Length: 436
Ligand code: ADP
Ligand code: ZN
Image 1 (cartoon, protein in one colour):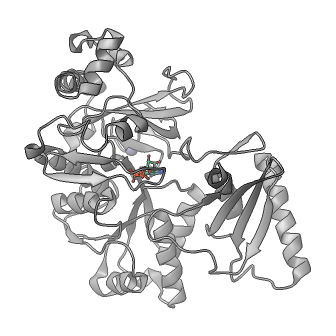
Image 2: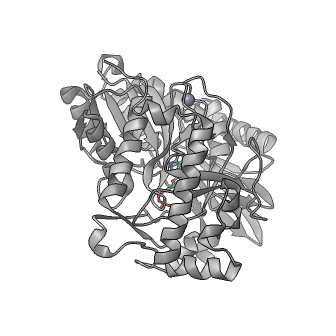
Image 3: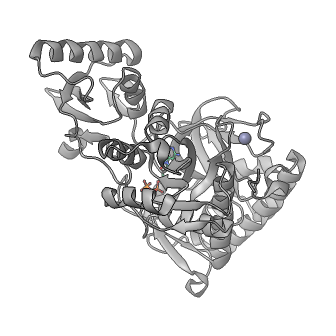
C-alpha cells in the first residue's frame, strides 16, 4: 500500500510547532558547538554572543557564518563536536570545487539521515514493496550510502549498484525489475540514451520513478529524462557539509523542494552583505544543522543560489520549499562582464531540441574572455553539410546572445563525442583559471 508521507506528524506539523521545535534544537546545538568546537567559541566570543543570547529564531542572525574555507582551515577534524570514539562514519565532499573536506556522523546522525532519505523516497511514491536501484557512487561520496540508508529504512529492496558500467545497470534494470532509480540527472540521461540505443522499449521496464540530484539540472532536462526512461523524475538536494542527499526533497507537486526543517534551518541571504532576504527573493542558501551531533555547522554558506517560499504546498507538507538551485556562485561564469550560469545555457540548447550533452570552454585571448559552447548534434539533427552546420551554429549563437546577452562561439560536434558522466557532469572547462 502506498503511503503519502513517511512521517506525517512531522512533515505536516503546524508552523508554530515547527518553530518551537527549531528554536529548542537550535539553542541546544549552539550550546553544543560553543562547548566543543573552538572555532565557534572564538567567533561567538569575538562577536559578543553567548549561547543564552539565542532567545528567538530571529536571533540566528547573531550567530557567525561558516564558510567552506573554515572547513579547509580546520581540516581534517577541527570542526568535529564529539570525540572520535562516537563517530561511526566519515564521508568527504566530492571536491568539485577544490580541496576535499571530511565530515563525520554519530549513529544518531546516520539514523536521521536514513529518515530524511526515506521521506524523499515516499514523497516520490516509493513503498516498501519497491526495488530501489541506487546508482549514485558508493564510497566517500554521500550519494550512494545516503539513498541506500533511506531505502533500507523504508523497508524497500535496496539494489546497491553504485555508479558505472552502464551496460550492467541496464541489465539490472531489466532483470531485477528496479522500480525507482537514484543517481545524478546526467547519469540518468546517459542511462536513458543507452537504453534507447540498445533498442529497449522503456515503457516495458517496471521503472516508474527516479530521484535525481547532486548537481544542477533544468526542467527541460527533467522532461527529456522522463521521456527517455518513461518515468516521473524527482529532484533531491543535499550537500556533504550538512548531511548529504535528503536535506530537501521534492513532493508530487514538484514546485520546489521541502527542507527537512526539523533537522535544518534554511536562510537566504544577500551574498554581498550577508543580510537575510525575504521569501521569493533570490540569494545564497545558508543552512544550520539543529540536530547533528558529530559535525553540526551553524549558518553554512553553501554558495548555492536559490529562493524559498513558505506558501502552503498542495501535498500537505508544511516544510518550507526551496527552488532548484540554479548553480553555485562558484559556477557562475563572468564572460566579458556578463554573469552566466551553465544552467541558463542548458535551458537554451535543450529548448532548441538538443540533448544536454554540452561543454563550455572558457578562455581569455588578448585580455578578452571567450566562451565556446561545444554541443553534440543529435542523430535527428545531424548534418555533415558544412553550410547547414554553419547556419545552425549561428542560429544557436544568436539565440544565446538574445536570451543571455553573451556572445559565444557554438561548435556542433558529432553525436556521442562528449564524454558522458557517471556521477556529476563536468560542464565547464575554464582555461582562465588554469593560467592564473
Ligand atoms: P562537492 O561540493 O564536492 O560537489 P557535494 O556532493 O556535497 O560535494 O555537493 C553538494 C552540492 O551539489 C550542493 O552544494 C549543490 O551545489 C549541488 N547539488 C546537490 N543537489 C542538487 C540539486 N538537486 N540541484 C542542484 N544542485 C545540487
Ligand atoms: Zn509539497
